[in-house]
Image (tube, rainbow, N blue to C red):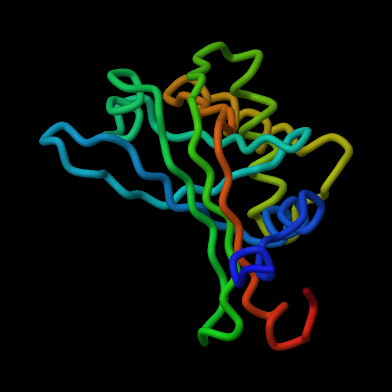
Length: 159
């Protein structure tokens, strides 16, 4: 068995890792031909990553021109603790409020301490998400290829 095979995450391990981590670095094709790397907050829906950003952001403009992105989520402070997921994706852009408002609500619940994970939100919070949604675009990342690594498996003797 190769070292690469030894550190590859299973589907369940990769999904659990993505659910646990909080920031994805999104690489798009920038306007000058260079990779454009930016962090995003995200949610995982049915195994697929979703994010939103301002519709006039450079990453949104890049994805309008070329709807492909590479995503990377990584954790670990030392080599033997490194783990991560890299996804090459086609990106579907969504601009409709029927998609944006629920996504914005999901992201708000995931990243805002003290906000309930389910049930109705206060009216002022719902109004804030709805106002933000009019200025945003949603990214649905459709995975084409995946690479994963978990160096902790080598330390644990898990092959």
